[in-house]
Length: 395
Image (cartoon, rainbow, N blue to C red; front, top):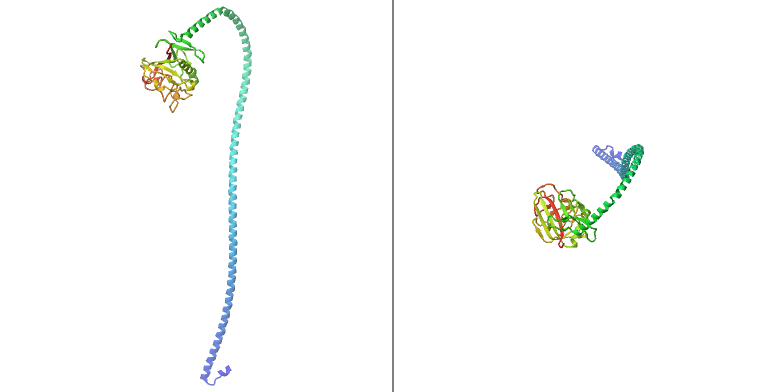
């Protein structure tokens, strides 16, 4: 049919029909081509979808691998931390072991030094033993000689003893005569109580053994018992409590009667106190108190009272009334520090002192140094001579 239509009958018609035929064929061809392209595009789309699915699967696989890798990293980090902890622990253990090693080294060095010292001591002891043995042998030889000499000397002494026994028998009468005279002299002293021109007297009081005291009748009449004297610095007055309690010194020179005797004397009956002073210009002054009383040891021998003052030296003792006695080993004063240690003496210190007749003695006038025997109401220069005396008010 197509061939028939295309057969030339009428050329214009034939041409027209030919163009229509070609156009139809072209459209059919293009339609097929489009259909092929659609199929190809559909196939490509299916392929793309397949690849997308594969790609999605690959992504999922990658994500799974990433998670696995992250887990592995976390595990590695955990292991790394554990390794660090183990390393730190081992470092500490190692440091501790090093410290222990150093300590052991030091201990070993110390032991070595000790061994060296002991070796030296052993060598010295060995040397001393050898020296001792040599000296022992030498002394044994000398002792043998000394024994012979002593035997000879004993024989000579026996002869002299025999001679002395003969002389002792001859002197027995003289000894008896001296004892009789001594007994008479002691009776005189016991009854004197420093009266008249006595230079010493034996005092008898309850609770104490009889004791000898020096007397003074030249300064203020008779009856005065000397209880303290400073004159040349020969006696140390920086004494402890027990020494001041018992007394010390030479009755005819520097002297302190003792706090216990002073207490027993002044409490047995009323006594007055007389203090004689002399400075380095040979000027003399005195202070006299009408009623002097010293407390017991339980009261630390404090000055209970002194009575009324008279004299030309000034009343320096008033500052010390009621004060306890202090020594270098017993601080009873009111000062922050020990005045007894500061002024090197025992005394009835208050907060410092206005007088101190027991202070460190100086052999020359040192001016206003404020050290030395002191009586500040007279002057601040040291005192050359001081004597404290007491006398019963009825004697």
